[in-house]
Image (cartoon, rainbow, N blue to C red):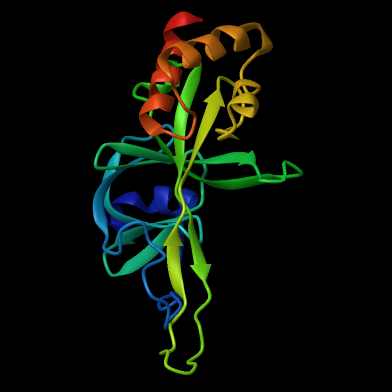
Length: 209
């Protein structure tokens, strides 16, 4: 991807970012993968374009490398495919459900556009404080800690956190289907905190209702 051939796309969907914005002295990386990876950018009403991309998890920012510069994607309609894993910016409920947030989700369900229920993964990185040197102990620097979460997205709805409590998890489903989903989980000993179990539940829902 280059500037001259894609000027309209760059002006509509991308914005330049400053260099050296990554905090120094922190152990680990704010990126999902530190190096740029070859990816496919799918723009609304445009042909997909290949480009090197990396995901800054802390800033919720997809960065695109074009020639000598780096840019971030502004438009939420752009889908980024990295190793055939699609990522898309979506509006979702915050932890306290008081207001909506905007962030990237990895879409785990194949052919997601035709499904009534989609499984999503939210990559997160928390920064843990370091510790000052003390008697018989060395100082430790601050560090990034991976904390990933799974979300459900029902058709025409915003992503909601897949609750770890079975009771709260069942309540995420339409009331008319809650009893059947609960029975399916009970019969198959499925838990909402397990990825394979979540995939089974989502597949059951999409093929049953």
